[in-house]
Length: 429
Image (cartoon, rainbow, N blue to C red; front, side, top):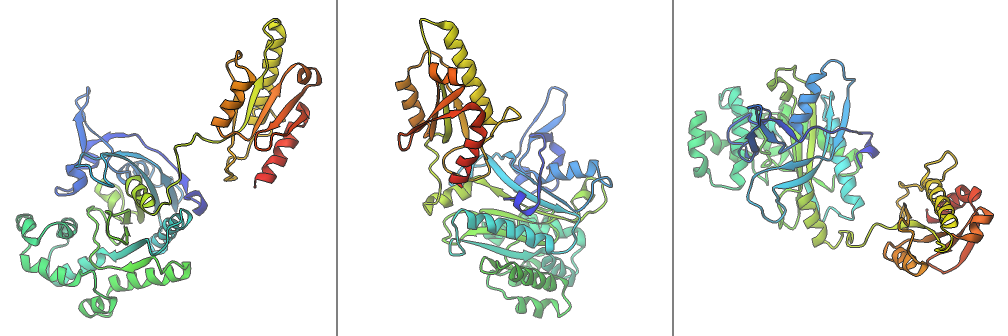
């Protein structure tokens, strides 16, 4: 999906310096680290998220990487937390990030990619919604209340907890920040799920940059044709301290699962590591919740069956003639290699076609197997064809290609296998 939108894949080590994640006390990600001291007396941690690793990589080459960067990754992540439905200590994420674009065009491109995925797996706006907000709203409210700018990020982290705990539960943390409960009360008066853009504008004024930002995002969503999926929700804050602008969160509309995905803008993240502020935004999309959702909607594919194989290649044996058996097997290797595209004149199966007939070429390695076993094995693999090399085929430099679906068998010269496979692809597509 990410490549469809012109993104390039990257990866990073699973083990990072612990300091990469210990930005602000109170963040869940900080409190849930799998961290330890290694043999070099270094404090390290298994990555709980990918964005800090990405920031470290960009910082190392800041000024040399052409922008905008459009990168994606599928990292394995770890968080030490209580497991529950849709929440695991070890999981995979789909990350997409854009660096070097200051406008909200980047955020909406990310939203469009996420929504395209939902559509491709059979979900609709009746199943999934995306709540949208901007942290600029909090920033502007705090400015009106004369709260120092350095209180912005930790205040966001605390506000994010209010959908899980009552205000009294974070009272001590608010006091540590020097914030009166009245400040948070005024914030929560605005940061309501049912608040409208007009209500926010009435509080922040007609020239509010935050309101204009949300208005621009919604206009672009309309241009993409995704407005049915996206809703302004002033209560969405997201719990990471480094977000600076637009934030968003995909959720199950039946309300049975936790957030499916989330992300936002983090223009100042590089500055926290000593680099120059750089426009950036992205999202993380975990595998645990979406699997639960697809199971609930009966949309999850059946992975219990083995991967479909296109062709099983089998060399017959002659127990009384080892030399001939070796020649047949050498020919089978050649046939398998041609079908896999390992030779210049090969006919590699198109693995991007999306066909259900399989793309693999299985070579029977055990040269003692009989045809009856081979055909049963091919059936278990859901193979479409079996290429057989025996005495007649060897003499003619051909293969007997058995169609396992209709039982027909055709002799094909080895020199014509490329043409045969191309025709198979056209029929399958």
